[in-house]
Image (cartoon, rainbow, N blue to C red; front, side):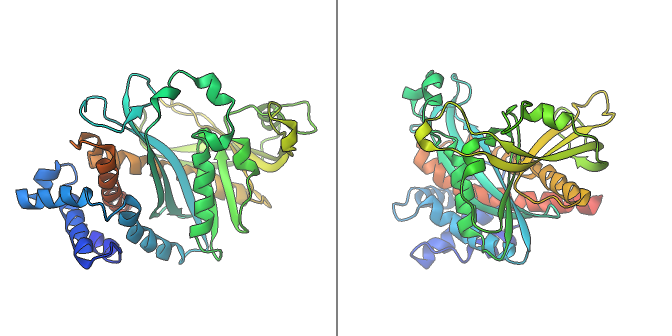
Length: 373
């Protein structure tokens, strides 16, 4: 693991070779004992102080720390014809860290911490390739309790913009010779994401949650898909979770072309147009009684020419658990919520370092499970 960290970080440009050498040493220490505190992982007080000094350096930014890993990830991406760019958001809870500054409220208004949004790339075979983007922010306390006012804001002024920013960065950083498919869960079911401009060879595969109005139809989205005739079945591997065991699920498939109607609550001056997409509904047949059955309604710009295309797209979406695994490793495996750091700024530097360590462990964990299987 330490050797992988070294190779991943040695190309990082921090303005001084000694800083890069220090980053590599920190990465090696943390990857050797990811669950340990920084002092325990560092081994000595001198190494511990060097780590904290590095994270406090005014000459280094979190993006600089990640850049070497991102460059290595792009090199891995270039070897593929198609890659999946999975987006997801998690939160870091620091409610008990009373002395920490620069944090804000979380999804629970009684909790304090930071939000983290990542773009994690994966091959179409489900092999992790690495992080290409990560944002971290604290919510402004003045926004707490003003959900109705936030609804009136444009997407650009809301957290929802993170999905569009992630897609645009993905389009810019991944070579145009590689087709990229952005994958996200129901939180990304946003008209502005569906309608945003994309480079050639850029598509998305988003799980729907809203029962949207359809252009030229009296039926809504879910009724339209449910009324389609079954067009076959397929099986997918469902990853183990806290609430259910790993299993093989048999899915019934329905799909059709639809046109999403633009939101009615937007200003007429925007001149929003319908967006034509492919919609895929898969429902699990005969799920185990202890398991929540799969029901995925997927919206995509990918072309469907056959049932085999649908099989591929559903399987690609099933790899979304990998980013959840990545965030789990970052928080539980690497213990970033236990870090005793005084400021959010220092924490963001630490997170940039740990994000590379967590990525290495997700790769190692997946390869181990494939080998043992």
